[in-house]
View: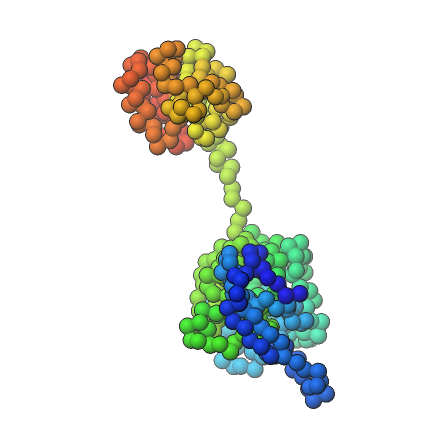
Length: 384
């Protein structure tokens, strides 16, 4: 069915179409022959822009053969020469010789054979059974299929690299295809994505390139957004082939390793515990009831040994810290019910608070300061 929301970010289209063409060809492939002319009727193409990510796209439903790749590029010697150089540079740059690569939407293997020539262990995925049979007949590795979900399993996976060439613009759900690819790659995988260049169409006032076969019209910016939303980091994005194409090179975004934060957490907790235990019970206060201090208080095992938490914000005074339920008091409490030490946890206000303690309260108060990821005890009198 026609759509009124973005195929990538799912925000609604801007209300009015950017362009509207009536009585346009229903498809760009499988042209009518003499016997079917009487049934051939034009359709209306409406071009919209997403109100969220800005991707320009047709509201039309996809052509019935959108899962199949149909190419005429094999007849061009210039294109074949260009692809061999382009793929060869890609293989060399990322040390992919002998590595496994998958082309999503490989057609009849027009590019698979070139991928083999430049040293890749090339596999193809294609929805058309006839095209797959042609690939196999020509000694190429190809299987029938289409990545339409994140859980799709591709024969031969995992792959070290992938290609999707002049295919993404056809898809009614590019996210599912890209997520399906992502989940069939090695952790260090790289990818090569190419789409028609909508930037160039705008620059050159080319108004006759809209077709029902192409649902999505990518600029460098919107292609980058689409790829990044689906787990890829864009390494390079250039205009190629007389500026008719946008070529993006990506790598698989890795899951962050935050184990070093766990180690730092334990280290800081130990420093705080050691400092607190160097004083008598209930003789240490914390200055600061911001979110960082509240988190550290909740993490500490010795929270019950803290007398109170000082904060200058009146709206916090008289309340309690979450989890440990320590009373939050005004700075005047340091006079009314003194402590031996104060741990300052106020981020960028640290030096101001240290000066306040020195100037307005007892010079005998020991001061420790949380600076970034460690406890600074340079202000303390009692060395631990």
